[in-house]
Each structure stands twice: as C-alpha cells, then as structure tokens.
Image 1 (tube, rainbow, N blue to C red):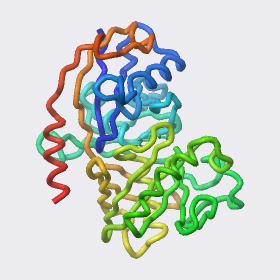
Image 2: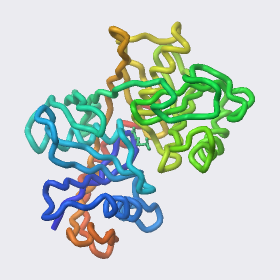
Image 3: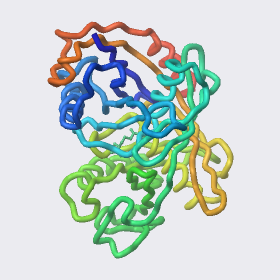
Image 4: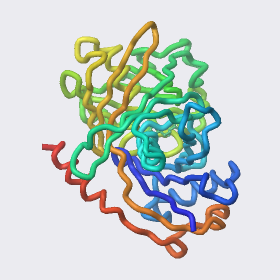
Amino acid sequence: MTKLLKVHGSENHFFILDQTQLKNQLSDNELSNLARDITNPDNGVLGGADGVLVVNHAGSQDALGQMRVINADGSEASMCGNGLRTIARYLSEKHHQDQFKVETITANLDVSKQKDLADHVPAFSVEISPVKFNKEAFPFDHLETDQIMNRKILNFDPDLRFTAIALPNPHLISFVKNKNDFKKLGPLGKQLNGKNPYFPDGVNVSFAKILGHNELFVQTYERGVGFTNACGTGMSATSLAFLLNYPNDGDYDHIIKVKNPGGMVKTNVHHQNGKYWINLIGNATFTDVVDVDEDDLHNADVSKNNVKIQSTGEENAYQKFVKTIKK
Ligand SMILES: N[C@@H](CCC[C@H](N)C(=O)O)C(=O)O
C-alpha cells in the first residue's frame, strides 16, 4: 500500500504523492490522469482537491527533495506557494530538518519551520522567487506593452487597472474598491483561461482589496483549477503589486497580513540590488492519510471504494484558528 496525504494551505487543497516510496514512478501522462481523477469535486476521494503535489528525489545536492505541481485539469505549473508550505512540512518531518531547500522546476527555494499559528496548526515560511515582469515570462501578447504595471486594459474591463507578475507562474492582479467588483473575477478568469489571444497559456487572476496599512484581502481564479480558497503565489504577487502601486499603504521587509476565503497568510516582500523576492508564511495542514494500491495510482483509479482513509484531526484545530482571525 502507498500513502497519500490530503493537505491544505489556507484551504487550498492538494494530495501529496511521494514517488520515492513507489516501486515504479508514474509517467507524466499517468500523473495528469491521476490529477484529473482524484481532484474531481463530485467523485474524487475526500471531495477532490485543487491539484496533486509530487515529491521526487532532488536532482541537485543542495535540496532535500523536489516538488512538482499538477493542476486539477492535469496541466503542470512551475510553482505553488500554498503547496510548497505543505511539502516543506512533509520533508521536514521525513528528514528531521527545520530549514532547507526544496527543488522546483525553476529554482531551489528556501523553506523553514515557523512557530505554530495556534495549537496543532503548524506553519512554514517559503521563498517565492524568481520574480519576472517581461511579457515572455507569462507569455502575454496583443496588449501593445512589454510589461503590465497598473494599466487599464479595455479588453479586460473598462474601469479596472491591472498588474502582471510571474513568480515564475503567471499572475494578473487588480485592486478593487467595491465589493461588487469581485463579481467580475469569475468571468475574467474564465475569459483569460479559455482560448484567448492575450494569455495563450492562461493566467492566475487575483482581485484584491486594501483593508489597511500592510493588510489585504485577496481572492484568486486559478489557471488549471478555477476559483480556489487561496493561491499562495497569487497572494505573494499581489503583495508585491501592492507595494509597487500603493507605496504609501505598505512596507518592504515588513509583515503584510493577507486574508483570503480560506483563512490568512503573512507575506514579507524584499527588494535588494534590483532583485525582488517574497517570503510566504502560513499553515501547512495535513487533514487525512489515504492508503491506496500503487497499481490504482498508475491506472488513475482511486475512489472511496478502493482506499482506506484516516483523518488526522488537524482540520478542527485549523477551523478554530480561522474563527480567531475573523473576529
Ligand atoms: N495554488 C497555487 C498555484 C498553483 C498553480 C497555478 N494554478 C498555476 O497554474 O500557475 C499556489 O498556492 O501558489
């Protein structure tokens, strides 16, 4: 039997598959099929998820393991901030280390264990980088600009302004004034993640409201997924866009509180020698352990009839923590 973990960061849910425990690795095609099957909200195990996080041995010596991110639609993403916190916890407990690097598709990123957010709510900090603004990094096209920085784009909306930041997965951010503007997020997210001339590979779209000095609310429509409770790279990109566009409302090298529909994270944006990076700090919650036959993983045949599920009890603790934020 193989063990899968059901996990979340700010209720952005994933299954962790540690391929180092398998007799045979899944091919890329098998990983895509598994992600589509197991994340399905209607018939996936435990109500589905937003994606699958795959742990492999690292190719480079200075990382403890490698993370790959497979979205719910089977596409692969270069990065996942909420997911990286849960992988950091997984590798930390497996190797008994509190500070190390995790290999991702584009970079080896620093992660470290933090003080628990509350009883039984473990927290990790993860580095979010590299940061890119040029259109090739997304890519985007047909917008008559090489960077999108606080610009109106009439093809997207007559009133809103947009900023595009790749971390290195692509993000488009807009700061809205009215609650009603959040209603525009779904249609715009769908437009830019369907066949469209502007973002041919799709884009994660986040809308944000400034709640106070160093305080934001962010909601994201994710590429390859749809609406999520939270997107870690989305909240990190939004924090940087916030400091670039509203310099009087927030500070570099300071904690920014970012509330989201699934809870709250903290970001800390740095800018040194022309380079930007962000630390993303938040929960890394393991909700369930799922025993599954390795053949069923290869065949993307994982249903409640052929798995054994054991709850960890951590979700109750997380929900208690969330109640304290909302007050
Ligand atoms: N939920 C993630 C981002 C996952 C990848 C994204 N959907 C993409 O395709 O870029 C996060 O927490 O960062």
